[in-house]
Image: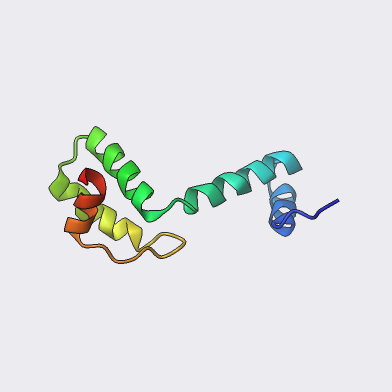
Length: 89
């Protein structure tokens, strides 16, 4: 039987929460997938979410730029123009 690469984290979650082992493993997988999203996909997804909330591009692109610096894997620093090109091509 192979060991789960995050078995220690799953064990910690099952000891400190009401999650069972299967639920804890799914939470870990979901979190890793969320933070594993490539920068370009993140920019497109966030742009769509913020646009749907009624924000303008002048509000959206600086916000996305600030958010990227806080991602688990540091994204390259992108100018506002580069962010627009990711969204609009």
